[in-house]
View (cartoon, rainbow over the protein chains, first blue to last red):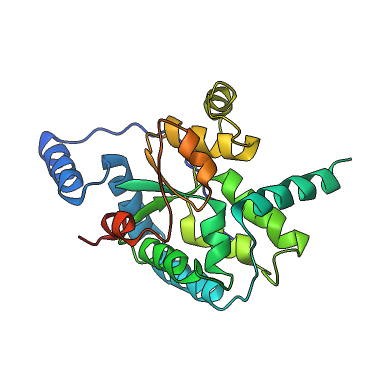
Length: 86
Length: 142
């Protein structure tokens, strides 16, 4: 399982033209510049990411759970945490 | 527009009921790159707790699959906890306060969830998965 959290800050230098292009694309897509950079990294350096997400979705769609109401879910989480407490 | 996905959406996507279709549509749009839905470490942990409890039916592997689908997930940082502790949000539970604070710290103003408790957070707009009209723009629709 790949573990990814957004906790790494990276400062990079771009040309004015690259910055214009990136900001223009972000505006066009209604997304943040940061999310576009992350997506580009995933697309270029993590081949198979889209396939992995598709397989995850298929697996979730095949499940036959019986999740209760949001309030009951919150109580389940609390109960499970209590049960694991030392 | 970036939006936050609560644990119940993941759980309902894997469960029978009226929420299953819309919840799967949300996850499908995210998996396909058509929607900018994000979630957090805390949500994945919540899903994992429920999966392991065995009290919401057979959900083996759900937390792992959810993580694969959403990775990279948002971190719960010192700033998130600080914001959660200072949140004025009525009876909202502690987990949900952490989710709300994660949204606020990351500049996310929309949360997709069936949990009405989030209506008490002024900084957030809650969209119920059953609200097709509100959901459509988030999923690349009109």
